[in-house]
Image 1 (cartoon, rainbow, N blue to C red):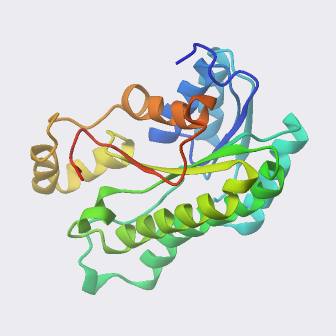
Image 2: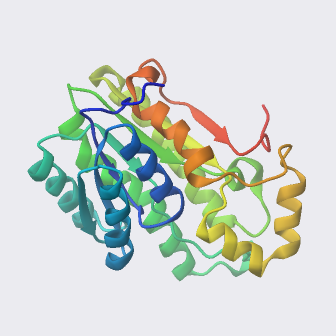
Length: 253
């Protein structure tokens, strides 16, 4: 991969104030991308922007909730106003309540997971489409093994992530003729959410580690982000509609 694989490209990353989103933003910055980062916590994305600027990146911060259709429209509009183009959309934002039995899932949990994940992904894709149409670009969405495998305690999160995978496949087919590629990463990363889960559910965390052949969770920047860089770059120009599992071998087809 070229040291400037994303030179000249503009990327919008949702939920980039921490974890995988921030790891991807750092990786993108290191290979020449100009960045727009969003998040609900303005202080977090401001701190992230300072880190990214120190890496030499031009960064636009956009506080807001990914679950808002108007927020998605406003975010894309801000990117176009600042940079004049959009080349890469990374729909990373996701909130959820893990460890809840299927019978106990309530409306608030459904709204939180589906809103931030499935709806937020759709809203940003729709808002980005007019600016990618005809000129091409890369959309990177996020699935999860909790959906592909059906993990206990992750009912609505699993449904959200499988919904995102279905949405991504349809978009890959519908938008492929426009040169727009749409792919999904299913990660297993030591994110802030994963650390919190490990503290709250140590037995289930130990189980997850036991079924990872590499016996560790991935680092957001060192292990997950390079795959996002590949999917964002022209080196993946013939890859679309795919789910790429970046989780140490947990899932093998």
